[in-house]
Structure formats: structure tokens, C-alpha cells
Image (cartoon, rainbow over all chains, first blue to last red; front, side):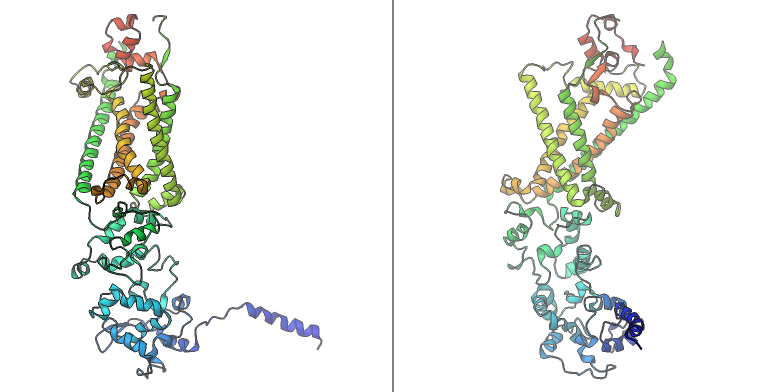
Length: 310
Length: 249
């Protein structure tokens, strides 16, 4: 066989190099997904907690974590299938998982496993007012990674329009708790933060597609969020000079009260009522005058024609 | 017909006409862009599309600011021009030609309403400006004071923050936003119903009163709409000697 003949036979095989491999995740994940992509519905664990069993393979693969193996986070399930729940877990993850077990009774280790890659951020969250509500007060309300970022299997970059912490949906995500009346009462939080944000020029412009206006996290920070009464909070007292100053260069003490979540005081409130009365009054007068004049014109055209032409 | 009476007279000189054109172009731009922001959430999605027509939120905001400044300058120009006309004695206050509201305007209004309702056979007789036109004119002053100042403060908050007194800071920003937005709606409603009806839709002016362009009014129309001014300008004509009240249609 000549070299040329070999080339003709072999060259088409080069086309295969354009075919991208479908399976980007590890063989181990593939094994898990054989079952978990097909499983539907939720399972009630011994502790009485509902557990989601299904993993959408396509969305998982497209997520930023698509390259990870299941057991990178679900450390306790290192054997197939689930035979060794006592597998060795690094001690720092164990200590985190014990702190957050009230919130994640199903697999606290997996919820703690974010720390193995995102250590700095995770520590910020645990020290934040959200994290401390879980670790110190043992409540289940405080936000942890998944509450804001959604399921860890489907996390997309923050620039993605469907990211729950992105520009489009962030306020909605924060509002799930901060717009909740019961939670606001339970923790004595500022009541109408979501409404006042929505009313503000910031949120209106955001809704209209402005790319420069601030989201919740622009002023309150994201992971190391602090109570507004905490002197370290970016919205505490004079810290606002710097926070507002990020966009509004030269922000001063008379300028920073312009944005607040507090309900309108009596002066704006009654001025608005007065202006509404004025508008309605003027409107009523105008409409009455215009209609009366138009009707009299019609009347004159029909009944008083002769008088005019005389 | 007397030979002294010209076919038409000048009502608004070129400077007033330019001021009016500037006023209504900026008014329309401000209304179109501001409406999208005031009703950003409703109707769902439409405001975003509407704002995209104006080049997106950033560009619409820039258009709004430029138009706002232009309108304020136009207003200041108008006031300064009036001051100049008075100083040079080219304009004087005469009860028959002034645009200043007088008690007569209230009586004219009542008289007209009586006529509209068929309680009177006579319409009110006007000088150079009817009460409707005075209302139209002074509404701009109200708008410029309320919407203009609040708009300036909202457009340049940092500059204004140095001027406002300390005790007002807790509520003034909200107050400014409310003033600007609510009064802008009033202005739009006013123009849409009052000005549009009186200067565009009314059968006798439809599709528009051309004075904004020509600046001239025919003496025929002057006699009909502004009889007091007509009699003042042409006192010795035979028509004006006998009261031509019943000439009204």
C-alpha cells in the first residue's frame, strides 16, 4: 500500500477531532448520574426532612461546577452507592458541618464542602449576620450559600441573566426573606426595604436596563453582610460617605440621606397628598371646561345656526 | 371695512415664537423620557421597550437632563426678555392687553360657563389674552418653579447638597422626587387636555392654531376672539362702534 492510499484512508479520521467529547464530568459522577438523573421527586429521610433526589445532568454540566465530581462535595458518599457514610472528612469541614447542621440536616458535610474551594468567602459568610444566625443562634433562617446562589448543582456565573444573584434577579432573591413579613417581625428588621428600593430611582433605572445602578449588594456587601446597626456595616452612619461615594463622587452628609429604606416622613407624605388633590382638582376643572365648551359648540352648530347667519 | 385695518397683525414676535418652540420640544422630550421612569414597572415590560426607543436608560437619562437644562435656560431667557422689554418701555401693563390674571378673568369664566350651560346668550369678551390663555401661560411658571427647581436638584444633587440647610436633609430628597414626578404628571395632563383642546382640537383651530409659526393673527379672528383688544387697536372703525356681541356664531 502506498503512502497516498494510506492517507486517503486515514485522513477522514481526522474529522473526528472536531467532535467534542460529550462526557466532561468524571466517570464517578457519571455513575451517580445514571440513577440520579432518572430519579424524580423527593425522599423523606429518617429525620423527616425532604430531600431532592433528581439532578438535571444538562444543567449540572453547564453550571460552573460541572467539572466537579459528586464526591468532591458529597464526601461521605465516596463509595458506590452510598455504602460508607463515615468516610474520612477533613476536620475543618466537619467543624463547619456541625455548626450548620441545624440548617442542612440531610448532608451538612456537602453544605460545608463549599469551604474547600471558597474558603475566604465561606468564612466571611459564617461571620456575617446571616451566618451567625445559623452558627450562633442555631436558626434555620439565616442565608447560606445555597439560599442566594440556588442549588449548587446549577450555579451559573453572576453575569448570567438567570443568576439569582445577578443584576436582574438579585433584589428578588434578597426579597424572598427581606420582603417576608414574618421574618421581618421575628428579627425586627426594617419593614419596607423591598418597596422602598423598588420606588427608588436606583431600582427603576435597573428595571429599565441601566447598567450602572446599584443592587442590594452594592451598598450592603454580599458575603460579609452586617447588621445596619453594626459599626462595620457599609451603611452605618458615616460609612455611607464612602459607600455612596463609590458612585457619587464627593458624597457628603447632606447628600447621603437621599437614599433610605425608612418610610416617607410627614412632610413628603402630606405634600404628596396635597399635590394629588391639586392634580385631581385641576384635572376636574379642565375636563369639565373642555367638555362643556365642546358640547356648547355642538349645540350652537345644530340649534343656533340661524342666529349666526342672520 | 375701513382702509386703515390691516388684514392681520403681529401677535408674537420671533423671539417669543422661538421660546415657545424650545419650550414644547423640550417638554415633549422630557415627557417621553420621564414617563418611562415614572411608570418603570407598568405596564409590564412596555416601559423598558419604550426607554429602549430613546436609546436605553443611560441615553434617555442624558436626553432628559439636556432637555431639562435647555428648558430652564429657555424660561430664564423669557423672563429676562420680559424684563428687557419693560426696561426699554417696549411693553407696558395695560388692563386690556396684560397677561396678568385679573378679577375680570374669574367673571369671564363664570360668564362662559353660564353660556355653556345655556343660561346666558353671551360668551365672555376677551382682551389680548383670555382666561384660558392666561391659565396656559402661568401654568408654565408653576411648572418651572416646582418641576424645574426639583429637577435641577435631582440632576445635580451633589451641587445642591451644599446649599440645602441641615434640618431639611431627612425629608427634602423624597420631597423633591415627589414634587418632580407628581407635578410632571399634572403638567402632562394639563397640556394633553387643556392646551391640546384649546389650540389643536377645538373645531375653530383644528388642526392647530398657526400663530405659533406665523406669529400673526388675522384681524377677523382678532375681532372675534379678542374683541376688547380689537376695539382698542382700531377704535374708529364702524364695526367697533356698535357692540358686535351677537356676532359670536
